Length: 331
Image: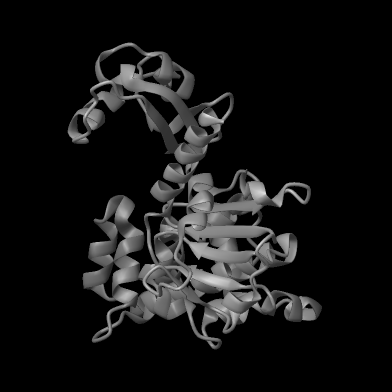
């Protein structure tokens, strides 16, 4: 990839910060796997004629760059974008309902202050991460670890979803598997609507279908807006949303089973607050799927479960990490 630390110069200029004798400790939360304090942004293809060229964000190169405003950055940490969300959980005000709401009543009172935490968030994709403390040094706080759990196998849970699975396998598949993210994400919501519009073609609303087909990468938004339309909801959009959030709830329940996050299980991402009416409530498709764990239903229902209603926790997590780096440099 092509390392381009200079892309941060306009941001620094527009920040309004006074750089006189400044020493900046920076943290950037970037989409992609982090290795050696560096990440290749593979979703930003530079379109080189000789092959694919990606932007590389290298924290060490940024800190060592003497050009213009970059010279004030003395230390730069790169973290995965969803790890940023994980650290952002530590900055939430748990008593503020504009930031967080209980999905299981009494969750706040059941939090184990040293127990593991997990975060699952659907947005452009499906992100997952987990946080733990040290049993020897719990006072040092939580460390967050990345996961690619959003790419586990999608398992259909009804005859209709078997048809969806076949549709997605044929659309994307070179192999006999379908990723969870193909259903639980903005693009996943569009995939579900696309399938339903084919099997229920006589019920398709032409105005919404035209809007959907012309929306490009924003097709999921079209489905979401028309599913949440209180005056004239689109039935196919509503069903697509119900299937998506049911699968979302099942995967959050899987995380509860796998991590037993007694410190809290947090449902984040852009799709959560936008579609909270399909998620909250014990009779919602989300919660029914979450607690449908057979012999382990009691286990998952005793996990503190929350919906994150703010979309800035990735940025707040980067701040948490930068402050930790700064404090570490002072010791």
